[in-house]
Length: 352
Ligand code: SF4
Image (cartoon, rainbow, N blue to C red):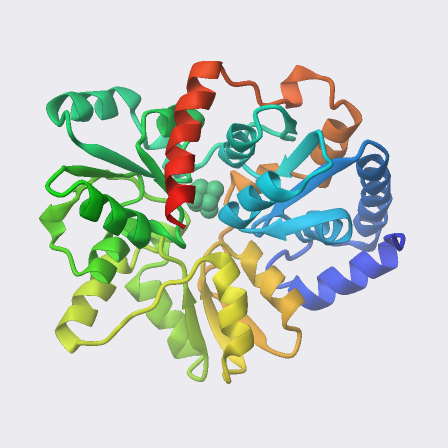
């Protein structure tokens, strides 16, 4: 593996994304980051750890992921956690629920997480309300988005991701006709499902949750970004706050509005003839897109970063790799929760 240098980090991050991270990448800080990245890479190799890095993480952590691990979206990284053999430890640089998902899929492995960062979708769930819904709807099926904690997953019948939510709901409707469905926690993703499957708004019980970052990516902010960049194509994540207006517009005008997961954004931008894109998701993804497709231009709808995702730092990751035996960095779940959540994830995997 080639060594990281402060010069490389400084040049790369300032040229590529100084608009996203103004004042963050001084030469001095890049020197320190390069030194930490080299130490982290050495530990990952020596300790034979599978490193998984989410698309919204800081650029220096993504660079480390590309060098000695994997970078991707929640679902893609879960598959890596399942399919990559030969590792007894996984380090997940992301929010806690993603590391929990890796643990549920790999209960025999040690799963490390540098910080117990939450997520506004996770925080919107109240377990007792799910239990009450189940009591009222004994044949009901709970479909939970992967952005939920392990306890919520254990109370669910199916898990879904932004890539496959419609497919999972369609499967439940076909195989359990007439059974009520509770879709949680993202109401905007639920709107996309309703639109894609041609359902009515009353056909699903929808949880009133949302991501505080994507919620602000609404019709107004997206229109403004498209006005500023009139030649740009739109890449829009299904958690965005514009989904209801979009669906109403789509129904009225008879047009199809496309929503894409973060990984699909890369494929879509690569395959498109467009040279410019407005990106409606957390802006960490904009840096990833610029890295993948340096000859195209990407503009964020908003530069507001997720405070949960950005709790993960290279400093914190290094600490966690150095002290991988410390339980404070390990995901520990009871057998009951692991087993319950695994059934819901397996139910999703069996459909895909
Ligand atoms: S951007 Fe942050 S708050 Fe929003 S879904 Fe992702 S982790 Fe949760």
